[in-house]
Every structure is written in structure tokens, then in C-alpha cells.
Length: 294
Image (cartoon, rainbow, N blue to C red; front, side, top):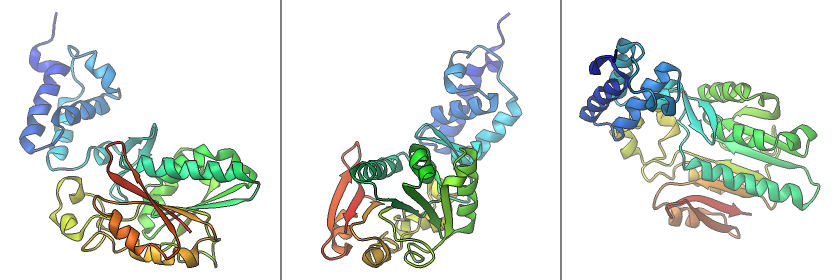
């Protein structure tokens, strides 16, 4: 006997979609499916293949929908974000990893590969503002052998103790905690003293303008302001980062910085004299990553 329409997974998805659409979710159907799949302990593919089955715990599903209806990010509700085929633990201690940051990781990986194959010199790579540690995890997994052999040293730092704690949890969850040095630091401040000068710098610094952060739209109302607020023009932290590169990084270092829309010209004007600046666009053709070669 077929379950009543209101008691099926398909009906639950439909009701959930309607609830989230009325609440203003930009992706109501996707959110409704992801949350129900999470509750069922399954993936969306399984869920959509079993729309006539009885849904799991309707009350618990309604509670998840209610949280999403307030604007709380799905990644915080589930407790993780799928990023570069990795499951990254997420909560309000740090920014949720974005798809666009995959380009930043890919650019850094390509540069490290180039340096490792160019000669036998040891390399220091440093991720500034590591947040959840997503990029550090990706780099550690990609270069596990080079790190173990001492060809590469990987440092991940953040100004937030909470973020460092979350990054440590993600590194441990992926089995690479012994391969990364975590540091509580303001930009590259300890480079050249407590820590070595990096050859490769990777940074996804806050670059959202204060006005937009204070508007608290969507997930910005739940993510930590310290990880988002880049000052009036979004460049408040990128300025000292660029100004300090020549004195804090190694000679012939390369830095990769994620930027926001229409910030490329500002970054070019802030780059240290004598450096080479290259803008790396994303798949949509939007300026996304700046490469600065000393």
C-alpha cells in the first residue's frame, strides 16, 4: 500500500521548498533536499530515488527548515561543507569555504608544484587567515610526501583563536595535523623571527566592505564579522598585507590573494614597487585571485 502523499519524501521536499521559498531562500528546492538528505543520513541522489518512501522524523525536519528560514547557512546547520571533494567542518568560528576559493587553492598548488620540480630547494608555504583550515587541508593532502620529506613546510595562521581551533579539528579529521604548523598571528607578523619567511603566500583575507557586512544579508548575518569585514572599501587588510610582503616574505616569493569584484585595480596600485601583478579570473571571467611576484 502506497503511503499517503503527505507522508512521503517527495511531499516533504515539496512542503520544505514552499516553506523556504516563502522565507526568501535563494535556493529553496536545493536547501530542502539537502537538509532532508542530511537528516536521513543519505545523499541527495538516494533521496530523489526514494520519493515515495516515508520521510525521516518530520518534526526534526521542520526544525531544520525553521533554522534555514532565518537565513542560517546550510553548512552551519549540517556542520560541514563539501569543498574540493573534502568534508570541511563548519560552524560560526570561521567563514564557510566558498567555491571561488578553490581557484586560490589551485593557483597555490600549481606554484608549489612548479617550485618543487624546478630544483631541490626546500620551500615554505604559508596560508594567512586560514579560517576553517580548508585550504591548508587541501595543500597538506596534495603535498603529503613533500611535507613528510622536509621538501615543503606548510604554515597556517589566523588572528582568531576560534578559527585556529576549528582549523586544527579539520586538519586532524583528515589525518594531516602533524604536517601543518598552526600559528596565532596577525598577517605575516612573525615571519623572519619566530617563523621562517615564506616562499609562497596564500591568503583569503576579509574583503567585503563594512557597509555590506553590517547589512547582515543572508549568511553574512551568521558568519563571523572578523572573517568578512574588509573596511570601507574592502581593502583594509589587503593594504598591510601587500605593504609587508617585501619585508616579510622570502626573496622571489609569490603571493596569491583572493579578492572581491572590482578590487583588481586597487590591488595593482597597492602592490610593492618592482613586483609583477597578475589577475587570475574565475570560470565566469570575474577577477578572483591576484598573483604578486616579488
